[in-house]
Amino acid sequence: MRPLALTILLAIAAGCNREAAPAADTSAPAAARTEVVLSAEAQKEGEIETKPVKTSDEPDTLRVPGRIALADNRSWRVGVRTDGLVVAVSAEAGDYVRKGQVLARYHADEVRDSRAKYHAAQADVARAQSASALAQRNLERAGTLFELKAASQQQV
Image (cartoon, rainbow, N blue to C red):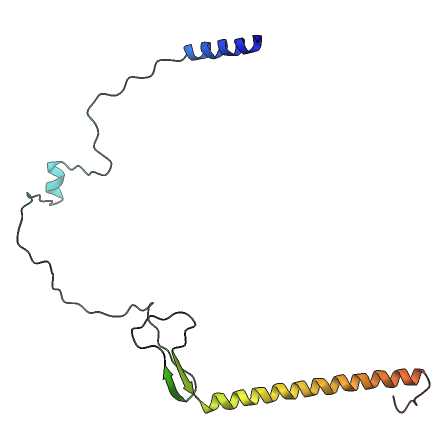
């Protein structure tokens, strides 16, 4: 109980030692930071002229000469590197497309021939790997038979 009473007493004493808060500044409020204030002399030097607001009948449209062009970073030229015949078009000029979307399909004899050669080469590689595996198994079998004296040195 005694430490609690002592703590409360010290807290009250510490609160009484504080200085009085400074009086609020009652002078005229400063201009907001978003406002720019120029003297009449500065306005003359900068050739700034102010006029009162008035209503007028002006058209809502403004006609100006200009040129409309596609943004360079928003359009692309698309092409192929082989000769062929376009058989289907999936997108037209001005359409929005996604990455990976098929824009057109074309038939090219060069591509078909290249694919056929690729598949034939894959089949040749598979045959060579199979023949190599068979030869390796035959060699191991002959070695085992030679160790068991069931085959001659010539057969290995």
